[in-house]
Length: 116
Image 1 (cartoon, one colour):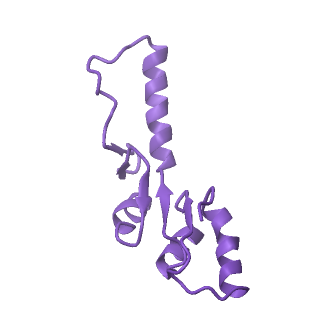
Image 2 (image 1 turned 90 degrees about the vertical axis):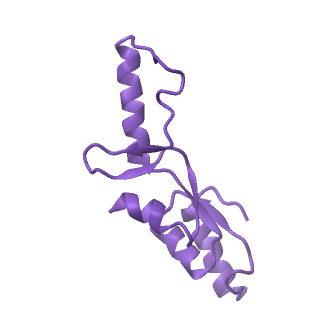
């Protein structure tokens, strides 16, 4: 079942667990935003994964791009602002520059690594 985000998936998962007694890893549910409840549902086997987008890194990149555009600057190289990973200048955290599908396998290297 595709849901708009983890917060919308949570009550559906709760209903499946409590009312229909659906077991973990038997009914695929997805989400996005990498919320705490979503990550908990993934680890417990009731959610397949979540889409992680490090918002603070996206905002930082958008501000930098807006400042360049306002100053009338253009890119010297076509791929200049297309990076696989972005770094937060204040926290030093590095995160993906594009959305990533998070599962128990890569949770530590994506959501956990950039939020600490």
